[in-house]
Length: 122
Image (cartoon, rainbow, N blue to C red; front, side, top):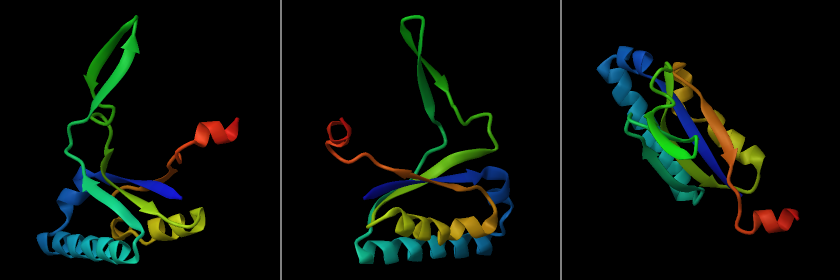
């Protein structure tokens, strides 16, 4: 089963890290990704540019605005997708994410729909 891991960050905390501490964290995350890539569990990982757009229907039109994270202290800063046997393994991977040790955000684990999911439920 595939899971999306949304990684939340807090710019104030990240910016407060000493350069050598940030470099060490980046190295840890690179090693974390390499281990998952080697095991075949990592399907993809990307950082996000901090300029999200939100689209919402408003009175029959679609309105584009900044956000929804612009006003928040925490924002989605990156994500990765894993393919694992079960939720237990997904949570094990999520708990081991190096960025969580710095208290600079959080991580959400979202199961991804499999093809045919809607028809399987009917």
